[in-house]
Image (cartoon, rainbow, N blue to C red; front, side, top):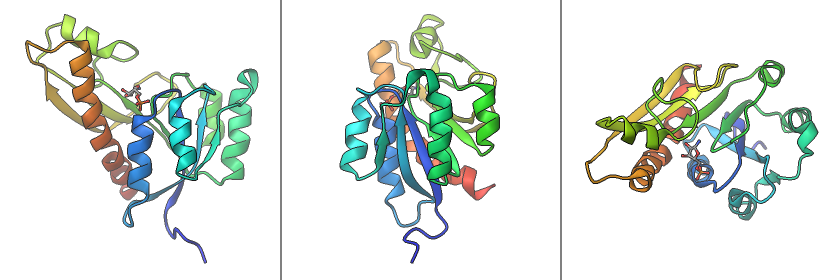
Length: 190
Ligand code: GRF
């Protein structure tokens, strides 16, 4: 009998530490979560997050040929019958061709209050601009970088005493909180 009836087969793409992956794995194990994480793909074989996934008995692929990363990933996504991709600290930009060929939803977490600060160094830019708030956003992935529809975001106050590191820490905490919520919200409204 199917162990996870109704849960969406999910692949998580990472490149490094994998703290968001960890929060997604924890969430996926809850009875009422809407996802089952079937595989974790990394473009970096040394990504710390791969170890945690493997300890959680999730299939990991960290050694995909760089020059053929997208095509090989597409094969795995098909093999595992993946319905949803969650990018979590995945530092490679997926091509329009990949997004079209996969044809199912791809979500991403971005450490800013989109549409502000697409791309890199979001915390540094928020501090330099003397913003009062920073935050994190979960959005749909489209061909245009960090520009798809925002599903959920949450703010944190930037204090005068904050620096890049302290802000990153605060934002990361809310990332872990809102990514699982955003996924369930997204899947409920499909
Ligand atoms: C997170 O801040 C994420 O928003 C950004 O990269 C960081 C990845 O952290 N895209 P982790 O690998 O999930 O710990």
